[in-house]
Structures are given as C-alpha cells and as structure tokens.
Image (cartoon, rainbow, N blue to C red; front, side):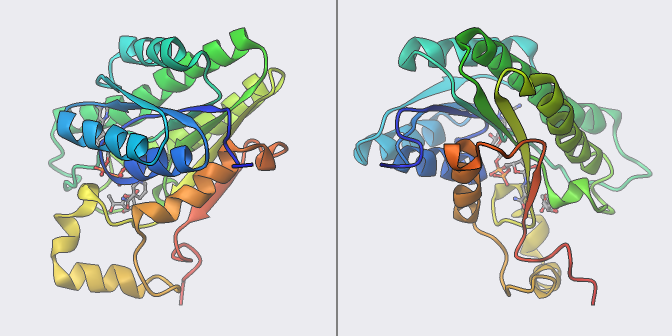
Length: 254
Ligand SMILES: NC(=O)C1=CN([C@@H]2O[C@H](COP(=O)(O)OP(=O)(O)OC[C@H]3O[C@@H](n4cnc5c(N)ncnc54)[C@H](O)[C@@H]3O)[C@@H](O)[C@H]2O)C=CC1
Ligand SMILES: C[C@H](O)[C@@H]1OC(=O)[C@H](O)[C@@H]1O
C-alpha cells in the first residue's frame, strides 16, 4: 500500500521547483494531485503529463495565490475532479533579492501578498473544505530555514517565512479539534529558479555549499520524503511541528 493511496493532495506553485517535485512525488505515493500555478502554462502541463505518464491522476488550475478568490476556486476545482481534499501543500513563493535601505514598496508588498497572504487564503480554503468533509486532513506549509535566521537581501522575505511558520502553529490549535494537522517544512538552500541568479555567483555558491554538513545544496526531490511523510497517516500525531530539511545548515555554527 502506497503512503498516500486514496488521498487528494493540492499543491500551490507547482509548475516548477519544489512544488513540481512535491506533486510528482505525491502522485508516485498514490495521491490524486491538483496543482496551482500562476503563469507557466507549459510547466504546469508538463507536470500533469509526467504524473499521467506514470499512471497517476492530476489536474492543473491557474491562479495568482495573492488574490483571495484563487484559493476558493482551486479547492472547488480539486473537489470537482477528485471529490475531496485531504492534503494542502502551501508552497508558492517568491524571493526577489534586494537591499534593505532602498527596498521598493511594491517589492515588499508583493512578497508579503504572495508568500503570506497567499498562504493564509489557501490554508483557510483547504481547512473550510476539510471541516465540511468531517474526516480531518493535513496542511503543510513550505516555510524556510529563513523563518529562523536572517538574510541581508531578504528583509522582505524572511518575515513572510516566519509568518507562514507561525500560521501553522496557530492553525494547528484552531483546527486540531477537526482532526486537521498543520506543520511547516523549513528547507535550507534548494537549487531552483528562486535562487538561480543569486547562486550564479561562484563565490556565493561555494560559500553556501560550504555551510552544509552533508556537503551539497538541496535538490527539489530532497523535499519529497518529508512532504509525503507529513501528508500521510504515518504522521497522525504530528501537528504544530516544524521540520528543517537543510542538510544540517542551520546547526552549523563552526
Ligand atoms: N529554493 C530554496 O532554497 C528555498 C525555497 N523555499 C520556499 O519554497 C517554495 C518554492 O520555491 P522554489 O521551488 O524554490 O522556487 P521556484 O521559483 O522554482 O518555485 C516557486 C513557484 O511558486 C510559483 N508562484 C510564484 N508566485 C506565484 C503566485 N502569485 N501564484 C501562484 N504561484 C506562484 C512559481 O510560479 C513557481 O512555480 C517557496 O515558498 C520558497 O520560499 C524555502 C526555503 C528554501
Ligand atoms: C531563495 C533563497 O536561496 C533561499 O530561500 C530561502 O528561504 C532560503 O533561506 C534560501 O536563502
């Protein structure tokens, strides 16, 4: 029996990166998968096609997570296709690196809206559906190691990741009585489009690699096992928790 057999899992921002890996990995573990994406039609279609080629079920629903209506539509389309929602993986996020002193207001506000407001709307929409269904569920937020530590060019971003982590702690309390578990994943540095430009600088990349006791930066696939675990009944008594998935980067002081 596969770990997510019979479950419906939704994941936001899944046309690329961690979200895409999560969608494909969850489908391989038996879940029917609904992916949200914002603009990349080809990426979303390719993700769905890869799941279907492997014998899985998936749909793609376009929508900007920063808009409150996107979350309700995403959940409704998933229910229409698969009958229910068991797991929500809130993953969509942006990190436009920028210095603090001249941070454009629009960059600050967009980052907050996508990463934090978007998470709030998605978690709320999924929870409403799970409560109506009456058989619990699992909500996973892709937060970050950056919820715990700072970044010079991430002053607009790290508070959103701390916020998402905090949202999981509060919703774990609010939703526990409905059997809905809420947990955060805290990835370290995972090689995706979000940091492609930043890590194009060989010195920066070498420095970041050097900080990881396991000796390499992460790949999106490194996130799949932790996501499937938290989504599954193996984690039936895990809620309000935060799991670092960082190759040991956080604890590496010296
Ligand atoms: N790559 C890394 O080192 C780390 C990433 N994270 C988090 O992981 C999550 C996924 O990021 P990655 O896969 O690394 O980057 P990515 O850039 O490959 O993926 C981000 C995804 O979010 C989507 N997205 C962006 N804005 C959106 C919007 N308004 N509505 C819907 N979708 C939207 C993008 O289209 C893309 O599919 C983000 O929340 C990020 O903060 C956390 C820690 C480390
Ligand atoms: C985008 C960054 O490389 C990445 O995002 C995070 O949340 C991590 O802390 C990394 O800095």
